[in-house]
Every structure is written in C-alpha cells, then in structure tokens.
Amino acid sequence: MKVLIVDDEPLARARLKMQLSSITGYELAGEADNGLDAIDKAESLAADILLLDIRMPGMSGLEVCRYFAGKDNPPAIIFTTAYSEHALQAFESHAVAYLLKPIHRDKLEAALQSAHKLTRAQADGVARDSRIDEEISHARKQICARIRGGLRLIELTDICYFKADSKYIEVNYKDGQVLIEESLSSLEQEFKEEFIRVHRNALVSKSHIKSLEKDSEGIYHILLDGTDRRITVSRRHLSSVRTLFKDPL
Image (cartoon, rainbow, N blue to C red; front, side, top):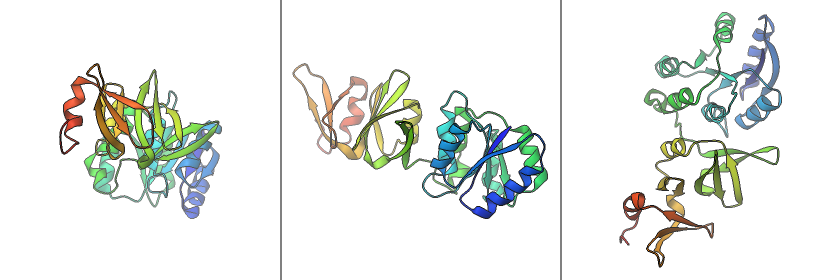
C-alpha cells in the first residue's frame, strides 16, 4: 500500500516517515507540504492512503478531504492533528480515521490497517460537524480545479456562479470557466452565506449580483458583475432572490 505523507512541518513528516519505514506492507509514495501539492501527488503517484494534516496554509486538510470525496476512487484518509479530543470525537463518529499528535507507532499501524476509502457522506459529515466547527471554519475559501493537466485554486470571491452541466459543475470566475466534479447541492450547503440558488441548476454569488431583470416573455434573469452571461431565475426561487434587493422588483 502506497502512503503519501502531507504536513507543512518537516519534523512531523520526518517522524511519520521513520515510523512508516518500520511497518510491514506499507511504502512511502511521497511527501507534500501543502494541500494543493497533496492532491497533485496523490493522483500522479496513485497513493492508496493519505496521512493528512488538518491545519495547513493555503488549503487545509479538510478541503483536501472534500476534494477527494467527489472522486470515483478516492484514497483512504487518515487525519493527523493536534486538535483536542473533544473535536476528534466528530471524526470518530463519521468513521474517518485520525491520529492525535504526537503520533505513536502502534497507533499509526492500527490506523493504517483499518484505513478505508473515503465517501462523500463521510467528508461532508466531518466538515459540517459543529464540534469541529468550534475549532476550524470548514467552508472553503477556494475551489480546486484541474486545468490543462495542472491544479489551480480559484478564490471563492472571484466566482460569479456555479452551474450544473451534465455530471460536472461549470464554475464561472473572473478569469474564465472551469469544470469540477462536485454536486450543486453540496456547494449550496457549504456556501449558503455567499451564494444563492436561483434555479435548479444554478447558484450565483450574492456579492456579484448587479440587477434582476424581466424579459418580454416574463422570465426573470440575474445580471452579474464579472460576466456577460444572464442567469435565468426560476419561479420557485424568485421570491428568495427578490429579498436580496432593498426594493423588490
């Protein structure tokens, strides 16, 4: 089984690497010191298991967890963390393996032996548990997308809208468009403070809304800053959209 060690602290990676070398049946696939590099190496090296730190600069371990939960064949995730036992009860309740720092060899071996593939339900459950939310904000500040073979982090504040397109989600942002493999409903739940559902297939950024207009056929459309696309508003969601405006249209 190939293991990728992900931690922004060199000493933490070195300790895990030393312990892993003494455990039969597991090999070091590689190391990463941030979330974006972890995703790239996990996919390119076909890692079976990630030993994943939670708090890292740029992209947290929870964000990496959510990214892989949307994939068809995700690696097993073992969180390595210095969080309190109180918060870690949440991880345990959602059946995602974890190790509390400082990590001991026997506990690492036991976690590796019990490691299992990550599911979206587990990732969502961990990311939304209120006990974890007391210590870390679970909503992402960036979206990770694969563009021309590479990975890019797109700032949430730069995104105008998400739109369902077959099994993918179209992300329209200030520099263009990309496709990601996530569900619109999970994005709506995670970003409910920043985005609003305007149609069964579309979420728009509240901060990018410029105006609400009605065409000659009586259909309403949202106009957004940063794009010339007009997003149709369904009758079902028109009332909630109107509440965003001081003077309802």
